Length: 420
Image 1: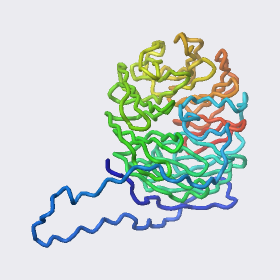
Image 2: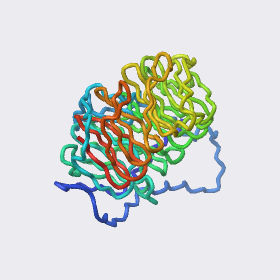
Image 3: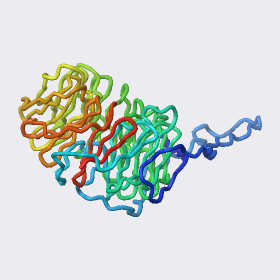
Image 4: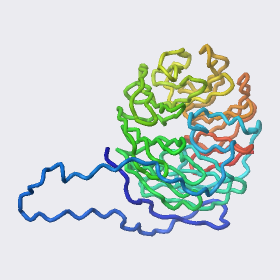
């Protein structure tokens, strides 16, 4: 297996002391020439008497690398990656989410925000640049005040949510790189070239990080940046979930795949009627996900056997589900949120919104938080779907909401909010 680690491509890193909000123009600093090509050996025209195999470099043995020193201390209730945890359950059982919300602070970003933020140890990490021409950023912002601590700038768009550990921020970019950044200052630790631009979020599980390029899922050492394995399928727009030694993800070939987290070997696949862009959520031995055929599926995580199919949405389901307390919460292009019993697949309730629901919900303390494509945030009672509050976070495609330390974070357009 070839190693696809590359040298740094981050353009600039700006440390901000005491700055509130983000606005204005960025320094037009030229990037360093960090991508030299290796010199080719000269050809002296003499035949090579050695066998060709002897010229091949010995394959480097995979290692996850030595753990980095802790820089921060994430708490149990911190929303450190897309879907809250590696299983993508979207359920923060450690936090008391608010039932009514108003904006406590607002962050102005250089480009549009539509991807999930992450929260760890009092800092929120916000990606932007989805619709920019050729650049993107990750902002590290004080979660209490909204003041920017640092930002990392890339020479391509950031089209996925970051994953954060006690030492490192992991993120992918539209030019096909997985980056590992120091969580304390945004300096690059390493980067790995993928097989194409990534639009889905990496997931961290222990000493491994799993990332997606265009058609390939990669298992990468979290500290070494070495690629352990690759698994290819046709067009992957589904962020992987990890549970009990298995990586789960969907593909545009209409399948949900389960592969061994250590080896990348396929364990099973399940076929639906259309492409699977929904990121799966795994809970209690079951994988829950949606499909472009308009259905929501529950399959056994170990065998891939079908448990049930929910057919009441009837239109494209690309959003990811959240799972909490025996209920699956998921939206679709029918402009509604559906609550489904995890055991039976029967619908418990449905709440209509004003537009498509294409972002993953968040669940905390009996409340469901959801954003629709009109930029509205809804706070619903998880028991019956009764609307407890709404708040406009923007007037365009929003981010998924995340909940941490009694605060809901969400944004749309060029604004990102802390709602309390």
